[in-house]
Image 1 (cartoon, rainbow, N blue to C red):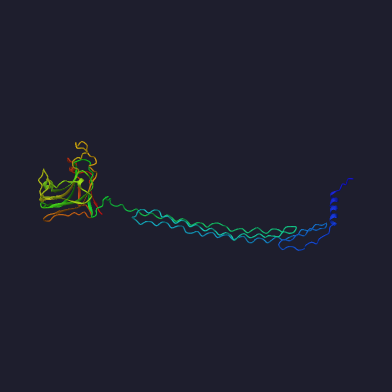
Image 2 (spheres, helix red, strand yellow; image 1 turned 180 degrees about the horizontal axis):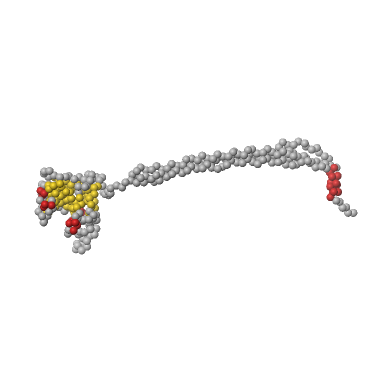
Length: 350
């Protein structure tokens, strides 16, 4: 036999079967944290779900962190004093590393509701927000220091200082047999017939040529001269040595005009290139390195000894203005020339 049961019949049958089971008492206690749902009824009617109260909300949001205090920027470099070498730009001290803001006070704990026996309690409020972690702004960098003022240019100096001050003679020789006069002009005609002239000198640069001490009369005697011995530049050293001219006994005198020792008006030091130097005995190959350009000699002092009132001395301790490089058209055009373009006198100190 076939039974056709409707859905309503099935539910009625189920209720009848449940009614036959023994019932238990419901638990009336609700939890403070989350109400305990009613225990399911054993009878036909299902237990009501407990309406548990949700847990307490989380604590307040964390406090914002304080921004770091920005330190001051570095100071600019100190400028050098005037006259020194230009100072490099002062390097500002590096900006201090700003302190970051402290973190917030911590997130609030969410409430932890106890689940009901049947229905779950509602969860707590959202956790508190953490503090703003923005870092403080760094200090501005220090500006660069001002550069020191450039020192004033000094007077060109020699590469060979002179301990007591001296006159430095320089001649740019380019041809053999040329020469250059360096002269001291006396105030009037002077009797040097019993005098000895001394020149304390040393070589700075040079090979060929020589140093001569010369005295000259004035214009009335057509500048007649007398000169001392040839002092080879190649034999001179870097140490000062004294060279002399005994006016009463010169090595040679002017062949065209008679020299008068009692009428001297010019004291002269001459640097002369002399004749050509050769690399071979047959004298067919000139030595190009022998004629040094420039040839340089330093004079520490010129003095005159003898009887009577004599001029000098000239120690060149503070200047060399009394000694002149005489460059005239006559000297330049003479054969051989006794003036060389570019010759100079320079004072040299310690």
